[in-house]
Amino acid sequence: MRKTIDFLLNDWLDVPALAERPRYADHSRITFESVLDTCQRIADEKFAPFNRLVDVEEPKVVDGNVVLPQCSHDAARAYVESGMLAAAQDYELGGPANRGTTREGRPGRTGFCRRRARSTRGSPGARCRSPGH
Image 1 (cartoon, one colour):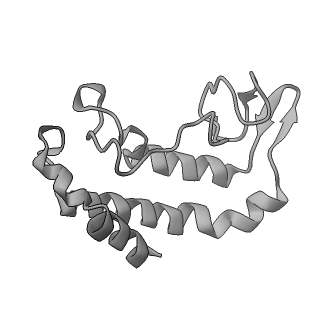
Image 2 (image 1 turned 30 degrees about the horizontal axis):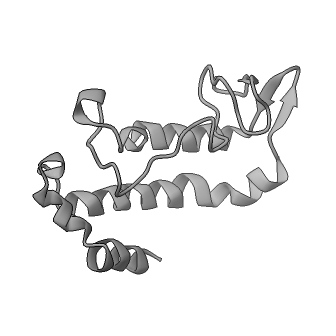
């Protein structure tokens, strides 16, 4: 899969050419590949091993609160701590300005809850009260 992604981004879409634009001047093919490496590592270590578990232990609403397996929180935390959540944001907003190349997940839209989440998929207004929060 990674070879296909690398081909699409580098050869077909010519993403490294973005580095010629002022907005992306601090980036290169190496920084874009580093983003993909980080995402691949998080997917392999934090998401993939628990695919079956989160299929079996589906999210549920208990007393108006969304309850998810702890591995969901651990995976989301790893993603946030990696800086990928801010990947599309400008420097002024705390991000590396990767907009248009690698998009970040958005809690509330992806179904991942965050501390004091305003909503989660399928349960508008529900707040996460799962372990770790």
